[in-house]
Each structure stands twice: as structure tokens, then as C-alpha cells.
Length: 232
Length: 100
Image 1: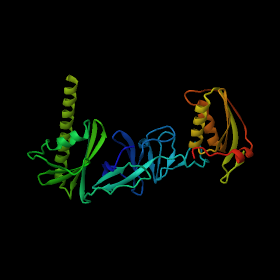
Image 2 (image 1 turned 90 degrees about the vertical axis):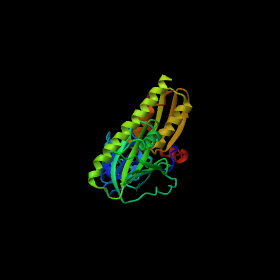
Image 3 (image 1 turned 45 degrees about the horizontal axis):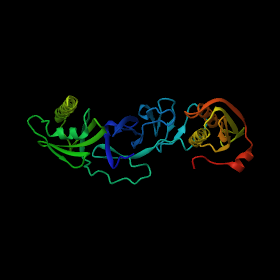
Image 4 (image 1 turned 30 degrees about the horizontal axis):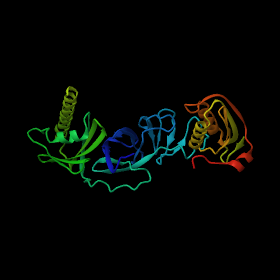
């Protein structure tokens, strides 16, 4: 796998304790789940038994169980129990590859360098944030980022500063946002948006509507670009 | 059939898979499946009509190995499977833990 460094996967708020969600980074599929103690895990989204997505499974306490045949995996990714063979001492070979995770800037980040590889330093992001929302768009991540400055917030033109290809600072008048940019696949992307500091509740809805407009604008540009390519 | 430390039943079995066999392909397939199931495996014989292997482990895992190898790799067709007890000495002298 050629994924390097930290990738934003979701807003921390959106993965509650005892839940799981599937996600992708550059086409690779992962399950993100949070155990009952609040720890976040990112694994290959595939049960070694029959290949079912683990993100369809159930989190119970500190393990996640596959939806298909109920194989249960502990937080180390090791299968501990197979319901159809309750007396079986499950071999250590039945294990799901897992990856490093951290939470920074109100987002869950995954590092997919490999289970035994050293993890890079965590993204330098503030802890005092207000989570806004994630938006998912059918367009490449660079196009989505380029579109941010072109989608006005009321009368305000966003001021955009890309710190990296995965962290973008956005200023909308007196509101400062951070976007975690997730390249889901070639033509799919997500922005995980948080606001710096505490945000007045009255601003949540306008910001959410702005994010939706941003998605529509970015998808329209991507569609127009694809149409032009076909015509050419 | 013997019982392990936690009362889990274990067995040592010789499987003879017969049919249209590509020996290298089938043996590699069997080694891979045995490794997945953490079963020690000994290859006893192989030609283009049959492969004989012995495995030692928990009954459920040995059964899983049986089922996996009954399907075989894509270039082999298994028509018959014979199963017989394997002597302990077989593993003492020829034991090989696959995948390591």
C-alpha cells in the first residue's frame, strides 16, 4: 500500500462510541470504529472469513463482530471467537490488518504505512474547535479545494490557505475554518470541516448551507470538465 | 482423536486428494490454506492424479482444511478425498509448519 502520512477519515464527533463506519482513501477500503472506552480503530474493511465489510458489523464493548457469521475481533484485530465453533481456540493467523489512528483538530486521522511502521508526527492542529460537518462530493480532491475560494459565503469571498494537500485553512470573514481533505478515490473526495474556537450556534446552519453549495459547485465543475473531455 | 489443554479435540489426518492435479499448484494451495489455519502440514506424495498430505490440529480447523482443499486451486479438479488417521511419528519426523 502506498498511502503515506496521516489522512483525515471523519469528524471525531461522527464516530460515536460503539459505532463503525466504512471509508476509503485513494480507493482503499477501511473500517473506522470506536470502542466502548472511546478508542478509535482503523482496519482493513474486510473480514478474513468471507470478505464481508467489517463496517457493516457490530461494535460490542471492546470488540467488533462481522455481520455475516459473527466472528469477533478484539482491538488488536485478532479473532477471538467464532460462534459456529464456540470451543475453537482461534488461530493467531486469523487477524485483520490494523493501522495507526489519532484524533487531532476534531478529526480522526489514519496512517496506513503498515502495522509495524513508525508513525509520523501528528498533524499540528488546534484542540479548541467546533465540529461542523463532512461533505462528500463526486469530484477530485484538488478540484474541491480549488473550488473553496470560488464559493462565496454570503457576500464574503473565502480566503484559502492550503497548509498541505490534506489541511486547508479557510477564512470566512470573522469565522476561521479548518478543512481536512480526504481523497476518497480518483473522482471522489470529502471535506471534514471544523471551526476554530467556539462557534455561535446561529452560524452553524449558514455554514452548513455554504458547504452544500461548495459541493454542488465542485461537482458542477467536475461534470462540465468531464463533458468537455468527452466532446473533445 | 485427542484432547488439547482446554479440552479442544485435536486430530492428525492424512488426506489423499485425487483427480486432475497440477502437483506444484495444489501443494502451494494446500500450504497456503494450512498456514491460514495454523495447521502443521507434511506433504507425503504428489503426482498428476493425487496429492497426499498430513495435518495436525483442532478438529474444526482440520475440517476447514478438508473443505478448502476439496475445492482446490483453479487449475485442479478434485474428484475424491480419502481421509485416514495419521501416526504421530509422521509429524515428529517430518513436521513442517507452513508459511514459516
